[in-house]
Length: 418
Image 1 (cartoon, rainbow, N blue to C red):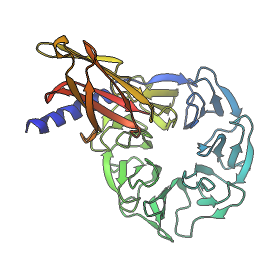
Image 2 (image 1 turned 180 degrees about the horizontal axis):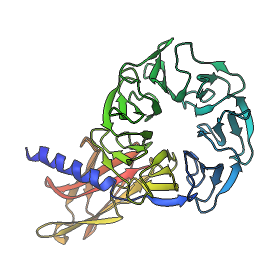
Image 3 (image 1 turned 45 degrees about the vertical axis):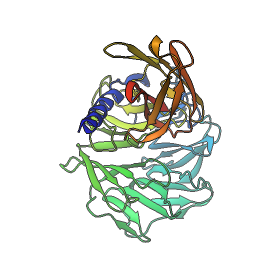
Image 4 (image 1 turned 45 degrees about the horizontal axis):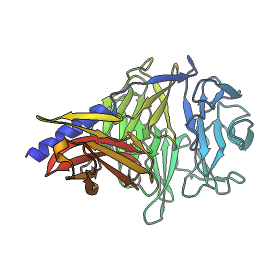
């Protein structure tokens, strides 16, 4: 029972630590930001759409307008970071999908499409481009946008808000659409998914081969909220109810961490894959959040588009460069860098009582479920400290390390791998 209670206490503390921070202003003050995108290789390069399409290359200190058209969606090509796409659709002759191959300095029309809305490029097949429309359903190119095929049938809803394609573990592909009438799954033909007859505004997932898919659905009803599927989008359950949801983002670094934005409730965060949710609105100008974005190169920051510009939030594990745990007799100090780059060496320094010099300590690196990933011995070769270099191949995410001696925990610390 004691071990069980300690796990619960740790989980509660962790949830509070991860979103104990606050949002900070980035740029485009007083602009209504409906969509955002961040370069996958340069976290200081952002695009935001307000009254026109804006770009910054210095993390938001300065912004320039790169197109007079406001975008409905902005996407970087996953394999070509200088190639950017945006959709423009207001019911004009200029509606369609636009592409830049020079990082957003110049743009060309790639495909004319009335009321063009969202664009999606799967990482497992980056020559494919899905393009949705509010009225002209769904289109697909297999050759980087040179040729297009109508990728729908007479049954699929004409208004498609969001689309994703996932390659399953057996290499079969799943195609899922969020539409005005709910979520649709491509069984060839397209069929509506039962129990999801609300407007499905946004879909997101963790990575390819991952069966969990998330959606926000609603139009002001008691059924509005965040929904999830664990079988690639065939069956869905509710995770959390909240009205007028707008966007959802699954952290690129950790599938347990999910951000949901709404028009009225602001931001809700889950750190346990949707089992529980807490508001995280400190620092935001109001309670309307339209969109999120996250960089693959610096996944610790989440960006949000609001009615008054762009804000960002750090997914913090609460780890400082040093931290102290007090025992009845001694202070034990565990030093570790809060963020570790995957594949790099990590130096772990533990201060120990002088009379323990020469004794061995045990370290255990665990994931958030408590599963041990790595464990070994640290030799305390110095008089007052033990130093260990660990070459980590941990996947991006949040972990904690325990330092023990004779089965007694001397120190515990959280850290992130990015």
